[in-house]
Length: 117
Image (tube, rainbow, N blue to C red):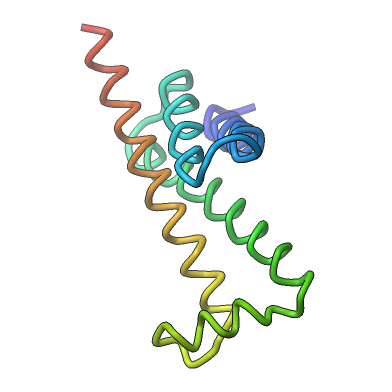
């Protein structure tokens, strides 16, 4: 398997496990651990954890919302300037989690370079 796929899967598995016991920032910890243990290059340093956590958060938000016909998601989407669009709320949720994880993955790569010297 390529390093990108290994990093994607490791980040996803760690995020799922850590989110059972820790708050929302556990995805950043999962991204940091996978970014520190698997070396990636160029843009994949940011986008691999970004996509992994975005998929996880959007899927989990969809799972939680589908249990109650997205009633709460629609109400939150009304409060935000989304015109009650719950799908757009799921997309924004994934982007926020992805950006947090991507920055954490980038930070892990920089820490790895620092400790290598």
